[in-house]
Image (cartoon, rainbow, N blue to C red):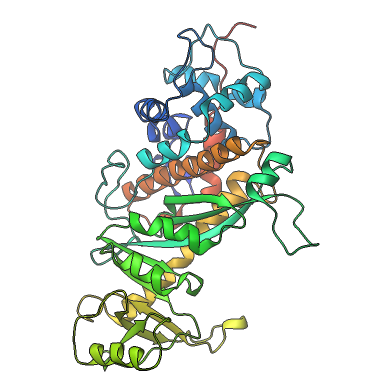
Length: 432
């Protein structure tokens, strides 16, 4: 996105994303003072003194501001954003800009629990009907976000380099095999993103040794019936499928290569019904589950699940995937509810999460940049603040795109981020 003297943004009138929308008010609007105060109260970390210079709500906004300016130190970031905080009623003009040591101590007092609580209260779906936690930012039926009546989501994981301190090493561990460990400890993040807007709507953070499937298992119970979760084949497991399907949400996952999928019935559109069976069942027990599926009997979810299988390849696909057969499993068993081509297109939307990960790691944080927090509690704070800031920016872009009747992909995340950073600065009238 380029902001020109002519007042255009990426070829669209500048009204699509205006400076008024992208001051630090982006964060204050997306993360209300009430949401911060409620999270602080739930975690029991309220201010001990009424005249404290760094009350919890200020620390929360400063921590988020640190994610906007990863190259600057604490004091520089605080100096940059005090003016915006003052305009939004989150700063007292009688206060001096806090020192790095004061900010660190204030972040320690805040602990690790507040930011996940803020995320849960503010980072709901962006496109479509409002959820109870995201009414302020839902923006209608955003393009690329829906398959008929289902909101299309994707789940994926990534790791984050954190400073090499004894505490971080003990909490998160290193990547790589013994003798060839990574240079820095690594935290693992698994997140669910809304495909059409790239907004993260749920996440789990853990040590590097905690596998993606384990963290994903903590996310599945949060799915809703109106959602369609897409996932790569690395996430498939019989118990994982059952846990996610048990929420009533629709699933569209790529099948691992070794998964056996007996044909139960061929459907008119060329897809077919099959059954995934608990791998612990073998021989005659397995065959009885398959026979029950063929007979149209209701399956015990502890033993098997009826699925619809969509198989296709991608013409002219180059690289390692050339000529590869893609096999998808879905809980949408009736072709009248979603055609095979619709499901293939929806699965392709899963790659939008790669874009979300890139926005988060490459553009917001900076390529190859190690987080700044040297203590485990502060690492957790920083990762969650980072997710919240990304969500606030993608929500802004989705609202702007909808107002201009555009696909959010038409807007440049990098350009909006630059505009936010420029507009977020401004020193308040403070004592020297």
